[in-house]
Image (tube, rainbow, N blue to C red; front, side, top):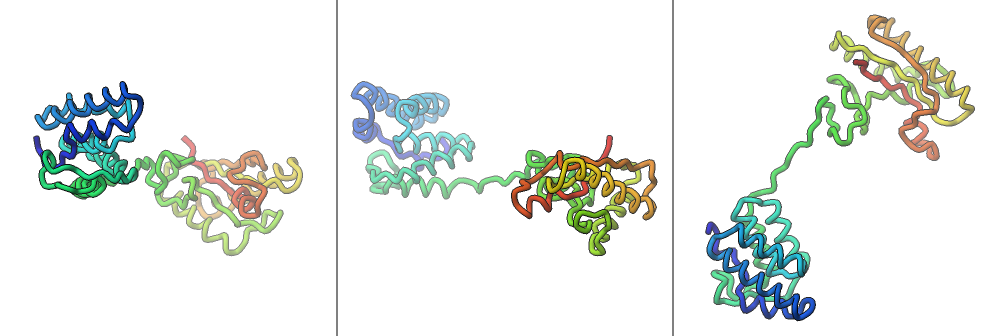
Length: 269
């Protein structure tokens, strides 16, 4: 066994503890499983120990002794996340029990919560795994609505290449401060000469469906014309208006309507 000093259960103490849980028959069975699990763990038989302790846990998932011993099984078999969860469960339970001296090397009289905290502190630091992000836009794949945005594209929180707040209200005239967004888009397109793109116009739900459809088409065309004037080949671009049919936020609030009034730049296959 790799780490005997982390063991925390002795058979007699387990029987006393289990007597307070469940029916007499289930308590007796739990105590038997726990005792035999402890014996197997002391002998370094982790497979048997885990099997028996999990059966005990099935009978009563609130026994801190079972959880502490399972934590040791996981720790000594290098399953540190499971060990961390088991020790943390004991800490969250906050039992008042203290470990007896006979079978708890180095932990005589220590509260079970203290033991769990010591064992937890002895675990290697939790590994931090970077979630996958196939298109490298900074939005993890499981949260990315637009999974093929090109490098350097300025995406929103959903991973989509959207241009917002670029037109005057209800019109197709570009705001002067919107040109930065458009010129950045030109740079991305120039840096990716094989990139083809659909320019999508979207509106909020203010006004009629017909009006919003026409407005979205005119705005998409206005962006198309701007990009072509800036040197992007016309055969790499298409444009289409979607009106109010594809909201990405609630139209009940001003900030939601502002998000919905957007130009979305969508790479094509």
